[in-house]
Length: 395
Image (cartoon, rainbow, N blue to C red; front, side, top):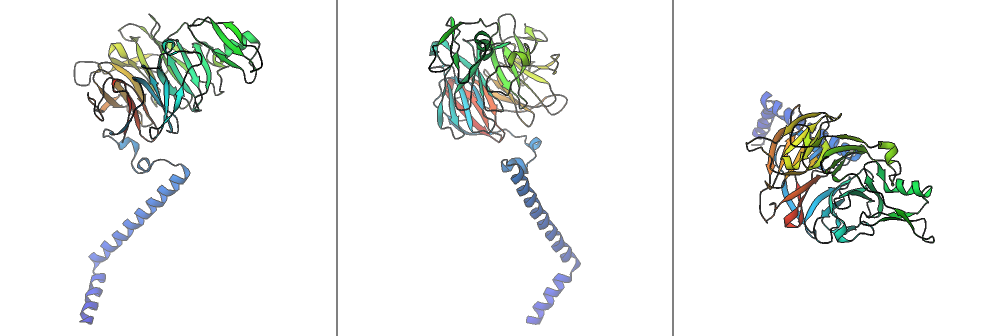
C-alpha cells in the first residue's frame, strides 16, 4: 500500500502537465509577492490610500457612493477642503453667515469670522484653500475676498482686483509694522489700523471696491480663478497668489491679472458665472450659471466651446459650483436638476461619464446643492443647501 502511494506521487510529479501547472502557480505566487513589495515600497516613498495604488485612476468609471453628512451648518453654499484633507470649510448663507470648519470625521473645529462685521454685513459664498492652507472666502455683500490661515486667524482682504488691504495700509502708513492689525468693512467709512496693542488705533479712509468677486478656485501652482459678477461686466479673472502670509505683493505680482469674457448670452459671454477652474491641458471651465452651460476657454483667454447645452438628457439646468480633480474629471453641481454631472477631460473633447444624486431629504439626496470640493483621496464634499448639511461621498 505504501509503495503504491509512492508510485502515484512519483507519477504525479513527473507528469509533464502537472509540472507545468506547478511552475505556473509558482511564478504567479512570485509575481504577487513582487507586486506586494513594490506597493509597499511605493507607499513608504509616497503614502496615499491603497485603492489609488492598486487601481489606475483613469480606470475608475463608476459613480461614488454616499458616506455620511456633516450637520451644524445653516444653508451652506460653498465648500472647500485643505490640501491634506484634514479640514473641511463650509460657507453659510443663513443664520450668522459664518464659515464653519470641521475635521475629516465631521467634528466641529471652529468658525472663521471677518473682524468688525455683523451677520447682516457679510455673505460668504465660495471659498478655496491654497497650498499653504490659507482660506480665501468671497463675500457678496463686502465685494471682497477675506483671507484666513488654517487656524482661523484673519490675515488680509482683497478689496479690489488690483489691491490688497495690507498694501493699502502700508501705502498710507509708510509700511506695516510687525504684529500690526488692520480690518476692513465695506459698510464703514474707515479702515482700522493699529501697530501694536500699545498704540492708538488709526482710522484710514476706506477705498471703494470696483469688482464683485463670486467664485474662487486655486490650483496647486498658486494660480487662482475668480469669477467677477459686476453688473454689466461679468467675467473671469486669473491671478497668481503670493506665497507670503499677507498679500503685500498682490499688485506688483498681478497688475490687475488676466480678465476675459463679458456679460451676455452669446459665445464668449457670461451671465452670473459661479466658478472657474483649469484642467491639465490648460483649458478653463466656467460654470455659466444663468446661461445654463459650461463655458470652455484656452489659457490665453480665447473662447473654445460650450458644454452641457442642447435639449437632451445631458443638458444642464443651473450649474453652480464646479471642481476638477487630480484624475482630470470635471464635477458640475446642477442646483435645479439636483444632481452632480461628471465629465472626463483627459481627451481632446470632454465626455460625460456619469451623474449621481436626485431630489430628496434622505441620505445621498439633494435639495438645491450649490458647490463641491474633492480631496486627494477621492472624497467628495457637497454643499447641500436646503438640507443644511455637507454631504460626504467617496469612490
